[in-house]
Length: 143
Image (cartoon, rainbow, N blue to C red):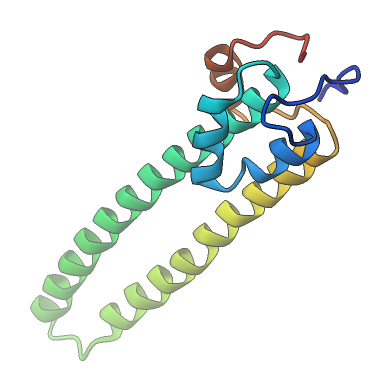
């Protein structure tokens, strides 16, 4: 984590910390990335938000496909074993727990990123943070 020097005003007219925070609303981040031309801090947070959203969209699609495959395999295994549905119940409970936890982790990451942006802190998420910095044209200097 790096605390940036005082940042210049955003070209959107918003305070940079406010623009960085609201950029964690996925679509707003995309819009801010394209309309913000001057402030690299805002551009970084906007791009990180977009990449975070894309990453989690892929995770959710993969999870949905895996859940469907596991449900089908579990149903076939349950029918072959003559089981009255205990395997299916177990698979359903595990799937429910996963589908409750994964969106909460996503939401927690969004809130964390927005709070860090509002605090004028350039926090990089693992994996996507460095990529966001490269795409946003940023360096260690955020202005």
